Length: 278
Image (cartoon, rainbow, N blue to C red; front, side, top):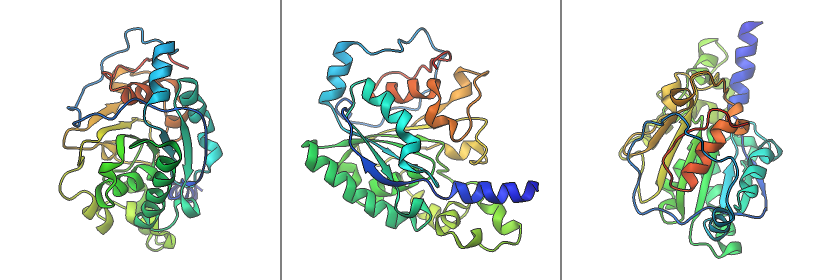
């Protein structure tokens, strides 16, 4: 039964993305260089509500696209989109084609088209991407291999297996074939040719501001540190600042402390997670 649960979890890990829905807000202007790696400090009373000036700045800045993860339907990201809209951002939620089960570069080309639509609709030169799980790989491929450096200001990944996950490898170990035939799962396996290509050279190209968020309790990204990026990214481990905070893989989308990190990243602020945020 335990092995069966692992297989089910693996299949779920391989699918999170689909269409998109419009909203009402956006973040600040893109930065001119990737930030230096930062060690998040304990929260020091960060406000949980935005000022009128902050909301106005968000509304005037880049539109935000929330890119879903493995097997994730757009509605699962509704609570995150609602938080962002309350802070003034123009927000769209993007659900990957075929729930992200297919080829990641193909999903990235679809995301590229969607980014172009949002930019045309809003008149914005750039968008900011907040991407969960597989969505972070799709977004990163778009930026790195499809010219996305010119149209993305900020990239924030939540529990993305940047360097693969053993959860994907375990399906093959159990004798069920190469990820039971699921292409995205094969590509997220540690040592895959897709990840070798994606991770060759600079992890963080262009003038995009890169932030990668991870949690010790992530049950689908193992080892947890495979959710980190190199080359000037800001890597945030939630429990470094908030050791008692329990946040799972899906919880990164709903967790209040994680949201304070997302908001700070979109505002180009120092990362100081608020451990008591709901």
